[in-house]
Length: 286
Image (cartoon, rainbow, N blue to C red; front, side, top):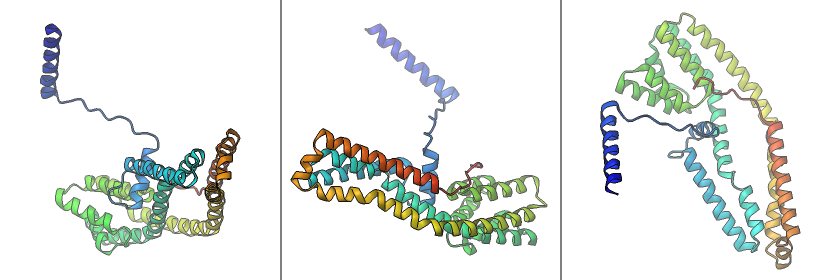
């Protein structure tokens, strides 16, 4: 026993010595596939303190509360379980809705930002000064991010690092393209930077116009589809408070009907989202 203890102590000692000499090995487990998309949504939603993992925790808490409330109301475990499972994505859907609202506002604001950058580049102003100025005179939706860029640049004086943090705060594919264009112009020079930005502004205005028309036509259809999915389950919860109805759903046949109905609703909702989804630019320049 003492030999094993001595060997363990010596092994730990060697690990500590080697770590002090060469540093501890860096290990960063790969993030799940859903994590980057949720992280972008949380960033765009502008909810202070929220992270993807905390959003998962909030979803779990919402499921637990809904399950307890529905079970206390109906006394049917199957109804409570299915309703809480259907309500599980509600917090993420609310965050996604806030993210879409902010993305829509920013999409309308980016042409104004580009016009300011083009005017400043033509006047010969420095890129750091132009971006810092947007924190005071830029569109209201984007001012906080540019104001923090100004603070980062003044504190450290590193334009590249401040740009990377700005890109992370905005979490927007348009911002990625603008930031990388400015980074390239800063490093190797960009005589055609104003032309590139002007063309990008024209494309963004046209995209915002077309997307706005499509969203206006599509919004009532999407809301009606969501109501069609939720309404039957609200009716089910209300009628399950009656003892006779509760007894029916507590049988194997009743549970099978509930599970089948939930599966059909989920498939129909996912199909509706797939058909009605508008194309969006991926963040290829993270």
